[in-house]
Image 1 (cartoon, rainbow, N blue to C red):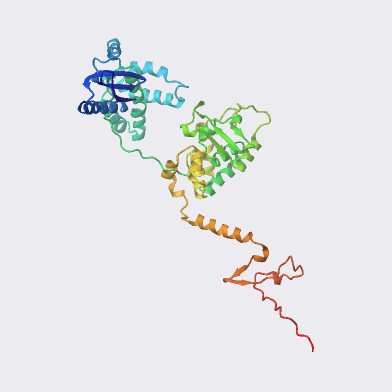
Image 2 (tube, rainbow, N blue to C red):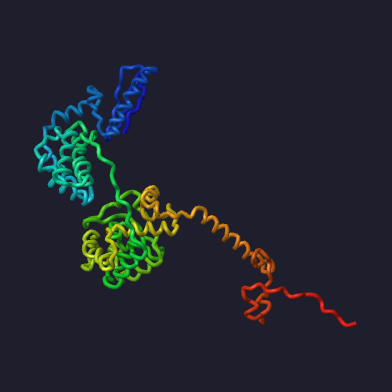
Length: 434
């Protein structure tokens, strides 16, 4: 989207508009002079800012423009409609695969429980920033919801519907969310398990719940999101190469694209992970068969599975309870602490380097230039090792000492081959008789 300044064939300035999949050429009565160009450019900046904020009103800027008839027709044909009536039409279009199943669930829950009871009969065009602030007050102080939940309801579900009413169906002109501000989000910090805790959990599954041990081991040692692992098919796994391709995610028994564009990736599998998968792969499977199944032979639903199986090992071993997603936190923190390259980790886990630095910075090693020193030390040792045996010296206290060579003196005793310096033999000639 944007607003550009052009000059037509007669030498007059004109606006070239691109927004909401529409294009329009709007002329002016101003010749292309420096003063007129500055004036028109100022208007173009304001128009483009409104476009980016999704509040651009074509008729306000161009009431007699080339596209005015389209907006006049939409305005004359539209009848006032309530929030409840529009939601009934709108929600019918919000179903998988067009949106995630979890998004459809949230829309229905948020409107059914929190928005429609008070605003069902309010006209769409009467929803203002003040209306949203009143709803927010009710959610926070009367229903005692958290700021995060209130924001998901208002800034997520309600905003999605009003955005379509404005941009798709053109039933309202203004965006009431422009003036609504929220406090900064407080994002929870990653909460990984320690190495000991991880091993205790894995051991518990191996002894008490062996059927699900491969599933838990896989998550702890790949860093995958649970929704990505439960969507894996055997066709996504290449055991000889030790890789797994992430092309989808699974949630609420429905599959969709991965969380982000960067989430589409190839994950490298450790040898132990390949071994675990090889041991659990059935003899007869197809490329479309799911890798991880529940005991009923159906794909695992990570949410329901966690409720049934995840917390028991922690309670049994006195481990502080964490969410199932902490398997991913544990992998990233373990890799960082072990000195794995941060760029490699970001690609392996389908996230950004910035996110890892922001949330996992305390796990990044702080050895300074120690790796470089180790590199140089190793290089010096290798250079020495590449010298011919006759040129090598053993140094003790910075002084060269001599030791008998085992290969040339197989009769040398053990004491002669110890680490103690040995006095070099006197090679002086024996004196002869006269």
